[in-house]
Length: 151
Image (tube, rainbow, N blue to C red; front, top):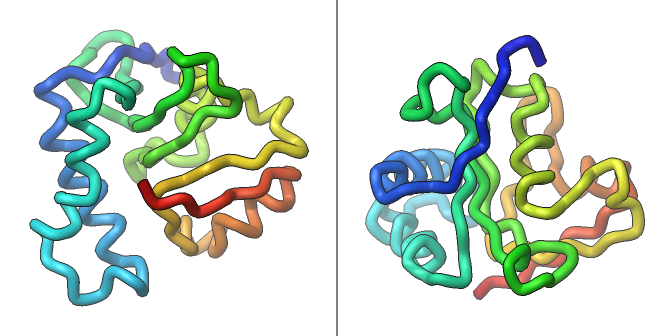
């Protein structure tokens, strides 16, 4: 990664972007087809308003208001290992540049040591991108099992 990034705690001003990007992405999942934006947003809102969940935001070091990615997670403060990853998002131009890896490490998940782990996820989207069509298969190749656990 050539651009130095800052990982900071999410703030109230980040929530609209988190909700919008979650809804835009999750709406493309086959099981969410036809669901309203309001309904999809209502799935993420309880996590964002809970003290048990946190948001970590990746920004360029020179502008902490520009969001290039974020992770919604729980478990780090309680010492739960591995953490539960509620949602992970990286803006298109920043994908495949290590942003997600940095965010996951901040949340307490070191991918270099993740082989054999079972992760719990309240949301599961099969398709990541055209280059990586199946999230579950991608995780399996790294030796990670993703267990779908709606909250």
